[in-house]
Image (cartoon, rainbow, N blue to C red; front, top):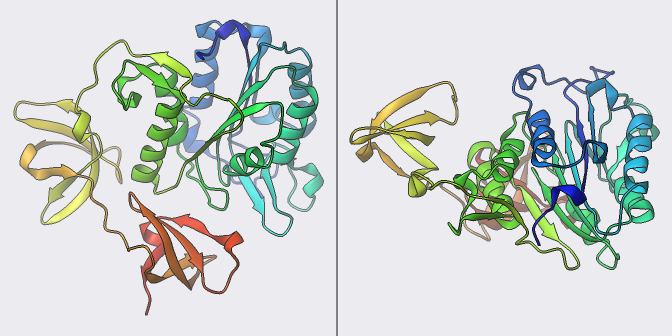
Amino acid sequence: MDWQPESTRIFAVGILEWEDSDFLEPFPDAVPNRYDEQIVNFFLEAGVPEEQVVFLKDSEATLENIENSFNELLENSSEDDLLIFYFSGHGGWDGEEEEHYFYNYDAQADDVDTHWTVSSIFDKIEETFNGSYALLMADCCHSGGLIIEAKDRTDSEISYACVSSAYTHNSSTGDWTFSESLFKGLTGNPEVDLDNDGEISLYDFSRYAELEMAFIEEQKSMFVTTGDFDSQMVLARVEEEAEFESLRRMEVEWEGDWYKAKVYRDGEGSLWVYYIDDGSEEEEVDRDRIRAYEPEMFEVGDEIEALSEDEWKPATVKKAWYGLHWVTYDDLSDDYDEWLGSEYVRERE
């Protein structure tokens, strides 16, 4: 199952500024390198017909415009079409109402009826889409709401694949790390071809995004498929060989401390790296100063303290992976379990 441009429908929403800037803070630093635009342009250049692509950007993405445009795109779909949905911007989660939101341009803080709900996205697909396969991706806080909704619809006639930048309860970065990973996957970047078979599958991309988000942002990207959606659907072919396969995510030693970095160029007996915590800082380093990324982690079952809503709370580690911890809070229900990075966990006092 490869994706075919002529039978693909794209619905993309990218928002970096909002009408109520006190409620939803803009992302001015993300404007010069908009990966939302680059992703949409890729699909157009790859041969998706222009009339099958909707891209609503910033002030265009009002709730009314989103709903009308989405409905029209789905109504005009064919039974063989693949729907690809992409959102970047702000996302929210209401634990009491168990509702997730992708915030439209004109969302108002004091009126939830003005918010674009994730459940309504799936409802509209179920009601109106004429195809059988839908791939949904989101780069925002609480984007894991896609995963929750897809899992709740396993009896649907539509098969879903969802990839999110963050877990359902967690905030996400204001950088383009997830969207850049998607762009690399679509354009056949060999770095994303994790099994080195010359093809980048949906699974390759989701796994690569998971590693990048954990390494760079200390966030847990999520992936799920339902029905007979093939996780090995080919997104792109790789035209060139990868470099630095074993050293892409590394740590560099400096004065006895280790710092996260990535290789970008080979030197004579050395490697050029840029540092994750300061992407503008580059350095040529000897190979003996480099080691694979080895994050320190608590063990499963360890009783710790976790930072939640600016308060350190007693918690227990349920899973630990690649510098992240899946924790359950002693005084809260399992509904509040979440993935946390290193700055949000510490030994229990």
